[in-house]
Amino acid sequence: MTNVQTTLVLGMTADGKISGEDPKAPPNFFPVDFAHLEYQTSLADLILVGARTIRLEGTTFTINNPELLAGRKIRGQSPQPITCVVSHSLDLPPTMPFFSQEVERWIFTTQTSLERSSDATILGKQAELFGFGDTDLDWDKAYNLIAERGIRKVVALGGGSLTATLVKAGRIDDWWLTIWPAIYGGKQALTPVEGVGFMPHSAPRLELLETRQVGSELFLHYRMLK
Ligand SMILES: NC(=O)c1ccc[n+]([C@@H]2O[C@H](COP(=O)([O-])OP(=O)(O)OC[C@H]3O[C@@H](n4cnc5c(N)ncnc54)[C@H](OP(=O)(O)O)[C@@H]3O)[C@@H](O)[C@H]2O)c1
Image 1 (tube, rainbow, N blue to C red):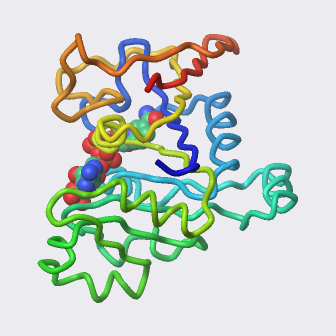
Image 2: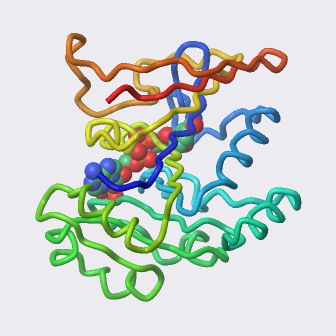
């Protein structure tokens, strides 16, 4: 293990959904949670985001609050954290606005995906491309690279599939979970941790570190027990 800290920051409705039944539907805006997300993200050297979230949203999350930008400068961080997209398919259209944003871009994939993708050369001009592992992404190798590049703080921003893979790999140290005062419902609507799930008897466990309530929004901070 490296000395890189990874914080997961996710919001979900009171019924446990991170997006609506139609993931293309624009999400609600919860101003307090947005400020919390911007603050937490402002601490990051690198953010991890799943390819599906980037494909749906088109852009990566950036910090705009002048005080948070000043804080980054004082800490010797670049204005924006590196955005690292995790993708198997490498289906990341080069015309996406993400590729024009003023951020450093990385893409984590596998060696097989790199060899099979006809877009790898084009993508390699727009982002740093890394292939870790043959067919399954090797998170140990990915985190060794992250540590070698001097990165100390990673913030994972979901979605549910990326979160599942990070939890399974034991890479999440702590988790800020916001409970939004809304109910999305829907059998197909995603939850914070997708993937194949865990057997209850061996499920990852959490320790609640702090809670904060602002109006009807609830902020829970957990430590992952390892
Ligand atoms: N409420 C919130 O806080 C929040 C936060 C973020 C996102 N969201 C929502 O969540 C939804 C998307 O979530 P999602 O679960 O469908 O997708 P996701 O986690 O954003 O992305 C899944 C994709 O990431 C790539 N990926 C994940 N783990 C990988 C691994 N170990 N190796 C290689 N590639 C890997 C794959 O990309 P490829 O398909 O390219 O192979 C996979 O299909 C959207 O509706 C978004 O708006 C909500």
